[in-house]
Image 1 (tube, rainbow, N blue to C red):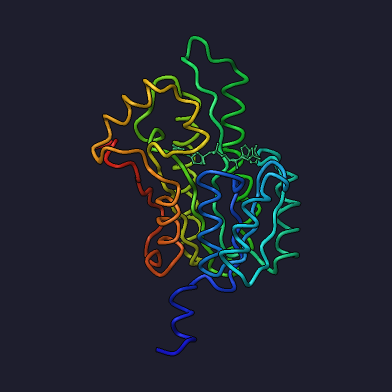
Image 2 (spheres, protein in one colour):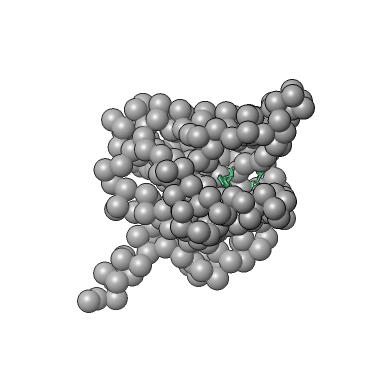
Length: 257
Ligand code: NAP
C-alpha cells in the first residue's frame, strides 16, 4: 500500500474545514480532536476562544498539519454567529463540515421552571444550532458539505425535570430532518446524534444517587464516553455516511429501548 493511499484512509477528512461548537470540553472536545486526527482543519468554538485553549492544543497534537483555530461566540446571538462563520471561512479557507454541539441545561420541574430557564435553553440549544445552520448553508451547498447536530435521547423520550431541554432537542431533530430534505438535492447530508448519559461536566451535576439509579437502567450497564459520540460523528462524516441523511442515531447503551 502506498503511503499516499494509507494517509487517505487514515485521514479521510484531509483538507476539510470543520466547525465544532461547544468544543471547549466534554463531547465537543472529543469530536474536535477526532476530526483533527482525521485530517480536518478544526474551528473550535465555545463562549470564549480562551476556553478552547486545551482543545486547540489537543487538535494540534492530533492533527499536526495545523490550521486549527479557536473562537468565542454566544451561539444564540444570530448576527455574531453570521460574522464568525464568515471569519472562519476567510481564516481557515472554507467551511465543509458543521457540528452543532454547544448545549446547556437548566433542569427544573415545570412548576418551578422560570420563563428565563425555558428561553435560555431554547436559545442556546435550538436557536444556536439554527444560527450556525443558517450561516453555513450557502458554503455547505457549494462543497456538498455535511452537518451533524448533537441532540439527545430525551428529545425523543422526554424527561421529567427537563421540559425545556427535551423540547430544544426535539426541535434539533426537527431542524435536522427539515434541512436534510431542503439540502439533499445539493448533496448535503444532515444528521443528528442522540446521546444518552455521557460522562461530562454536564452530567457531573447529577447527584450520586440519581446517577447510580440511571446507570442501573442502562442495558449495557455503564455510562457512555465522549469518544464514543466522536466515533459516530466520524462515521457520519466519512464514506459510511454518504447515503445517510435526515436520521437521528441514538447512542445510549440501550437506555431508550
Ligand atoms: P458540557 O461539558 O457542559 O459542554 C458544553 C459546551 O457547550 C461547552 O463547550 C460550552 O462552552 C458550550 N456552550 C454552552 N453554552 C454556549 C453558548 N451560549 N455559546 C457557545 N458555546 C456554548 O456538555 P457536554 O456534556 O459535552 O454536551 C455536549 C452536547 O451534547 C450538548 O448539546 C448536550 O446537550 C449534548 N448531550 C449531552 C449528553 C451528556 O450526557 N453529556 C447527553 C445528551 C446530549 P464554554 O466552555 O465556553 O462554556
